[in-house]
Image 1 (cartoon, rainbow, N blue to C red):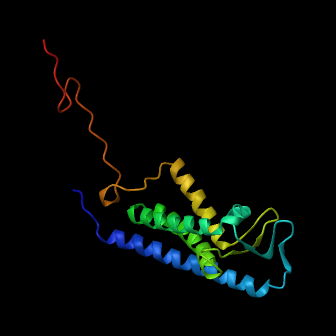
Image 2 (cartoon, one colour):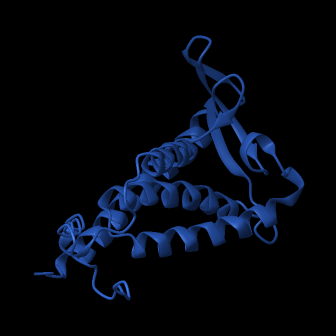
Image 3 (cartoon, rainbow, N blue to C red):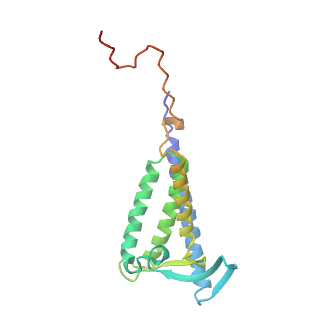
Amino acid sequence: MNQVHHGRPRIRVAVFACLTVIAVAVDQLTKLWALEALSDGRTVGVIPGLLSFTLVRNPGASLGFASGSTWMISLLAVVACVALAVMAWRATSMRWTVALAFAFAGAFGNLIDRVVYARGFLDGEVVDFLNYGWSVGNVADIFLMVAGVAIVLMILFNVPFRASAGGRKPEPRPHAEPGAQEPGAQGDAA
């Protein structure tokens, strides 16, 4: 009795879309706040020794890596967004859908900066403002980190990317009776 539930893909798509829209909105609104509140170059302490707000425009990837190749990082972000959307479409697991939505939102949020603040071909700088002392990031980076940790944990705990039909686990194969042969098995020729 393998029933296919046609409503479930729509639910996963809706969850992916809603989480993405909310996460990207939060990311972009916090970046707009940072641009307004911190553009004078000041640093605002939040948690002494752990977190402060400092506006930084990052042309590179994480930790400023590849700062001279902003357009290439932007193209990789486009590829990553397409790949994440395709993976989310193919996933039948809600857990994977949620993790991929956060990964997509993080990548897309930073890609928006690279497009909106570009002076040339995809060479815009990402707005970072969460200063951890050893690195400065943004909310999109937090979404990427949460998604990355979730994906690693799901892989470690064997959370299936695609569930069986109807969302049920596959039924175990029945054990063969002693002396019975598996279908297709050849008997001993005596």
